[in-house]
Image 1 (cartoon, rainbow, N blue to C red):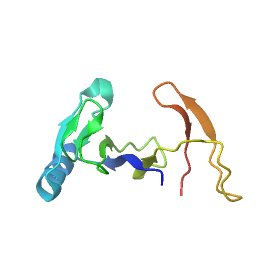
Image 2 (cartoon, rainbow, N blue to C red; image 1 turned 180 degrees about the vertical axis):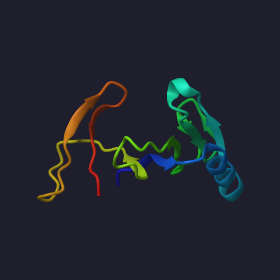
Image 3 (cartoon, one colour; image 1 turned 90 degrees about the vertical axis):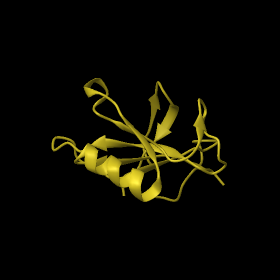
Image 4 (cartoon, helix red, strand yellow; image 1 turned 180 degrees about the horizontal axis):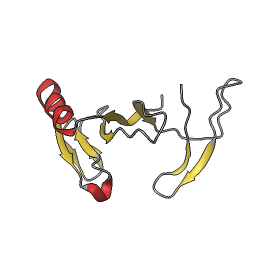
Length: 109
């Protein structure tokens, strides 16, 4: 089975959202500056330079909601071995290239 490797969720108030996830789940958070769009890095478990050290655990991030950008919903990233997989009709997401991640595909639901 292909693993979930990352998540992202929008926020309206950085102080409120970081306080909530720290308190409710014990996550560590780090808010970046304006040059990174005030993105919040969320570390959910012990991690090293390659990511979580706990098998099956994932880290993620929180992004500032913006009125000028549609479709700001929580998302998950799933690592797959091959993007040539042919999904059922109507479910094939568009594919593109990302300098950071290689070939990527995304689908809104």
